[in-house]
Length: 138
Image 1: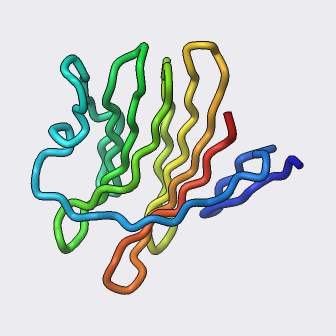
Image 2 (image 1 turned 45 degrees about the vertical axis):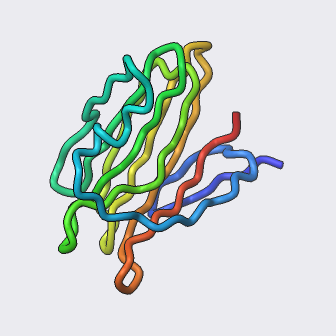
């Protein structure tokens, strides 16, 4: 079954019955790239850095690439759940302020030229920040 999903005012057209994941963000006290480098040879870079959010990409072109979102908060830097892509060729992120939090839309092109889309919406819920993630199926 195929349908459109709207998250934080963003439309991902024709996402097939994707199930949103809700996960807490966590405070970190060390550099994000140090956390993301899982193997020798992994490279970590900031893809986008603005006042609302920073998007990091870590990994190797032929293996798994991990993408994470961080946001500044009163408690320090918070990191959201990781999205893993196998054979990530390119990623185009868009960051939007959605009033209470931040929404990030990712358009990813894999090495086999297939497209994957994801929307991550992170916002405070009481004392915690939580992220809802919706990713298109493989």
